[in-house]
Length: 120
Image (cartoon, rainbow, N blue to C red; front, side):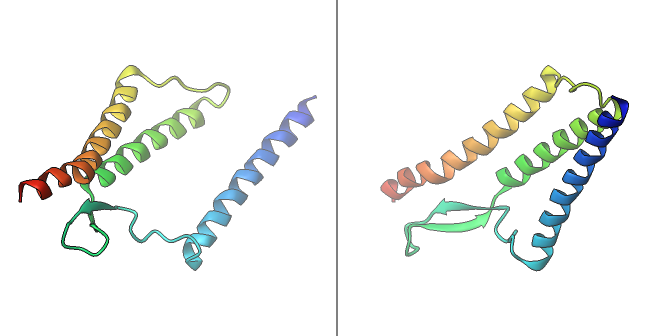
């Protein structure tokens, strides 16, 4: 029984390392593009499509918070791999607040632009 558990453990490690290696390979070869990752669309009545891409502070802060929580969670799993860690209410609040700020900024750039266009 012990050997089956050990085999399953190492198989899962090999599988995860394999997934990680494939994603890194595709990133380095350019098959997965990260250009525009931190850019968002903003309404602009002067552009041909009605929108322009600009650097998005909301996307940057959202990515930062999500990476912080993901790394924290991974560290907790490494310290105690026998059970899933519980996210604290403050951590959930941090994630929810981050997403609310991102969505608020997105709504402002997409929808309030119409109001600005009408006022001009």
